[in-house]
Image (tube, rainbow, N blue to C red; front, side, top):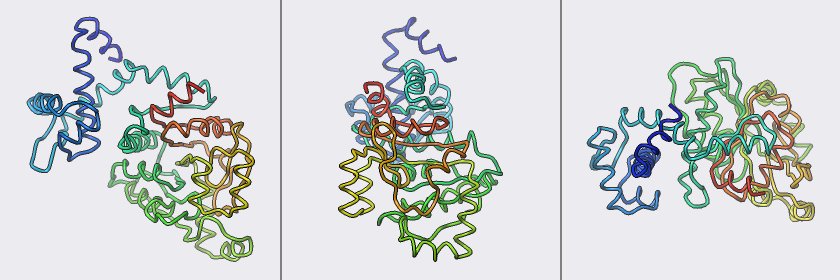
Length: 339
């Protein structure tokens, strides 16, 4: 099946671009539904006239529903997307790129989501859905899942399907809360993911960083001790990778700490640890949650990142986590290959 697109190209080379475009239209509807023609046109950077013609043909084949609120994909359309996903990934060279980046970074698995986040932010939703599927390949009823915060990890939770039967044992935050964006804090994301997986959850209810004295007092709370105990038993971690100085600003670090990060040329951040381009930890926050050494015992780490500016940081962090599975967009992938 994987070679079917190459066969079509040989038999009908003038049709291959049409197939790819209509697949892209169908995929865009799945991501953005309910959606209008104008949004599809902008997302794919093709004319509305072309989109209109493709929609008519896809609707005739009962792959799309057309209504007053916008376009939506049918079950038949989902089946077509599923069957064509791997053949088109192979044809577009994504599978080859994935293997190359695995060798470059020295990690277990790389998944590349089609699209460049720097050109279209809607790629984040597709990455979230893809990463959610990756998660479901390793989760079981006994799994304890730890999640960090941030908008990219939030997209994974958003992209997860809802299950009425128990899919995991428990979901916990990997760290305390961060910043003002409540909806992307690890506590909130853990609770939301647990609800979708019909799993239990435990929360921390404490800031991301605290003074040593305050931390010692808080750690004596029974509910916090229970959460930390579950966190230390996690066998799956969903990890967002950040750009060092951007994350430092979000966390409102002191001027002295910010200067340290600049002087030591920090380029990447992961749950409070800051790394230089060689993968060395140049600064660590006073963390509440999992430490960097804890990651080496977690068998399934799914890291998510978007954008070309993350490429160097991804390379740095991967030096320390060879068992990691990485989900990135084409923009980050192409930049890694150029480095």
